[in-house]
Amino acid sequence: MLTEWVRMGGIQPAAVVQHVRATMHRFRMRFLTAALGAAMLFVANPSFAQNSEQKPGDKPQAGDAKEAQKKIDEFAEAEKLLGGPAANPECLWLGRRVVSLLWRDDLDTAFRHLDLYDRFGCPAGHIQATFRCLVRQGNIDPKAADTLNSRVHGCWVNPNAEPQGTAAVPSGTTNR
Image 1 (cartoon, rainbow, N blue to C red):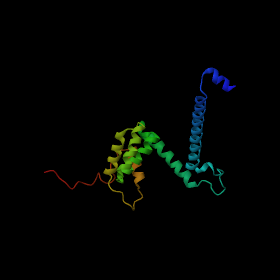
Image 2 (cartoon, rainbow, N blue to C red; image 1 turned 60 degrees about the horizontal axis):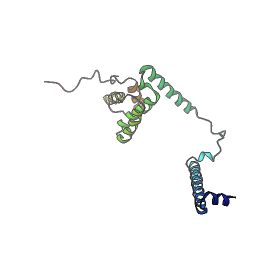
Image 3 (tube, one colour; image 1 turned 90 degrees about the vertical axis):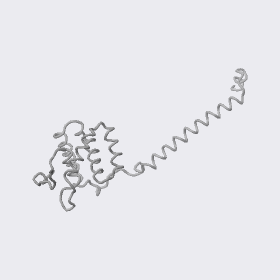
Image 4 (cartoon, rainbow, N blue to C red; image 1 turned 135 degrees about the vertical axis):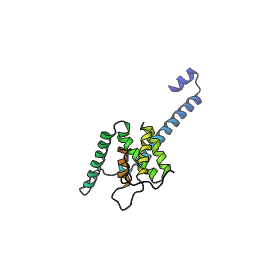
């Protein structure tokens, strides 16, 4: 029946065969692409092939809950003291990371994070004010309980804070 239709319509049988081959080739390429994509998903994320049931020994640690509560408290404190976009969780997290990286002289990574910080619409001036506050406080004593992260957070929520212990110490320079 197909041959009669081809003859009556004036279509050459070779053209029909060529059309069928092209269609089958496209189908094979689509199937191959889909199969490769699925294989890449399974290779990239091996958890698909693993059992997701939690074992009795894998209970979350109490320290994890304390850390999570600490982060929530820090976000709430920033929201209460700052308000505005600098208090948004994404701005707080990225901004504190940028300032910490700047302090540790990891400028390449700091600038990559700063690009993300800007993309979220966070205030760039707050990074500058926080870093200024951190620098004014001086070096961090490795033996002290005050860590870089806590100092960065303190400067983030109050960038105009006076450095502790330096207000009463007179400067060694004089103008004559």
